Image (tube, rainbow, N blue to C red; front, side, top):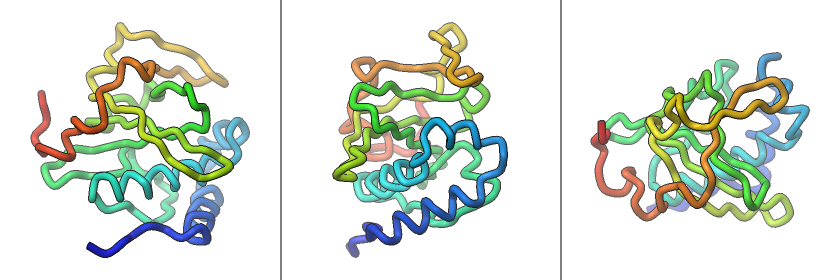
Amino acid sequence: MRDRRLSTQSVDALAEARTRIHDDTTRSTIQVLPDRDIIGVLAEDAFERLSGLPMDRRAKKSGDDGADFLTAGGLRVDIKATPEPNGRLMVKMQRAGKAHIYVLAIVNRETRQVTFKGWAYQNDFAPEKKHEKHHGVTFCAIEQKDLRPMELGPWRFSDEPPF
């Protein structure tokens, strides 16, 4: 299998293109985390290598419509990346449910190393779960200790949704 890893220049170029194309609805996130697109591209590139699923290498004005990857069986996988080592898997409430699976990636800004901490199904973000507001946006958060292990990810064994 050919190594599809993005070069440093390709990561930077794709992240810059995504930042340029985002509309005003994403500007508050960019102000809070100015390098969010680099962090996201690094995490998606690493997940492509881990899972074997193809990464969308385009910058689209419409974004990813709530999922970064699509399995052969139709499961939508969304990668959530943060530079915070103890970061939680956080999903905006208005986006919860757009993907079947959410994956938490920790990205080291200095080394650009990506570590996957675990994943959750969409129904793990049930309405009764804890909600938080950050910068005017409501999120549902799951602690790292409560995530499913990466080695049990359904992209590895089955493409059938569990529900």
